[in-house]
Image (cartoon, rainbow, N blue to C red; front, side):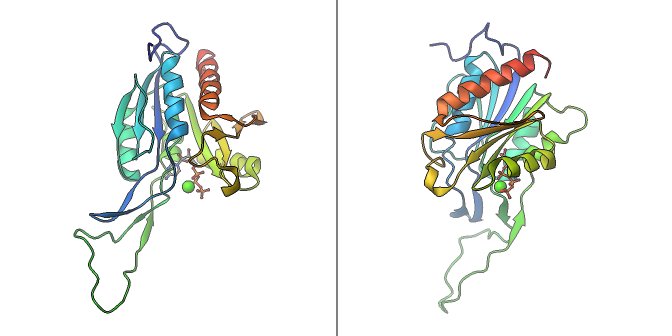
Length: 227
Ligand code: CTP
Ligand code: CA
């Protein structure tokens, strides 16, 4: 099977995709993370490559293996992910499917932290991570023609995602319901609301590969029309 179609609708288009969680160190042997498996971002990168795109896949430590037929850049932290994305530009489109840690540990230790014998626990201090999506969406020159974010929400999905689209300055938001009951975070399916300049569209609950195919087709249509 050809992972990348030489004559597909995305042939000649370069697309950066972020995926997976990030790991934020506490000390050399410990980190803060989240439950993202990287499944949706991986499926999307595979679908885009399948339509002929040249995909640069910037991924944190995901549970699922990266797809064939893409350039893989492995990172751990949000700061590394931002640098990798900036290094991968320019691109025709950028899709931010990663579950980036919102905060990193500001007082991470250079050596393994040790118990001091008194029963006292260390106090972690947090600093906000750079917003990779907003940084790229708000670039002056060199902004990809199509910038797509994801939004993990647990309530009022369309409202929160519409506000997020405006705040970030991106073109589309793919909103998903990550309430614990849905089984979407780490699961095989996704239930998506797509927010564009024209409003909100709710898609049926689909397998992550089907969501990816549908989204990749939409991206191909948009890039084909010059966005
Ligand atoms: N994102 C990013 N860099 C960050 C945080 C988020 O690139 N530091 C991207 C995600 O990849 C996703 C989008 O921004 O495409 C929205 O992520 P989300 O966590 O839903 O939004 P936040 O802005 O972090 O808001 P909150 O978690 O507080 O709802
Ligand atoms: Ca967040």
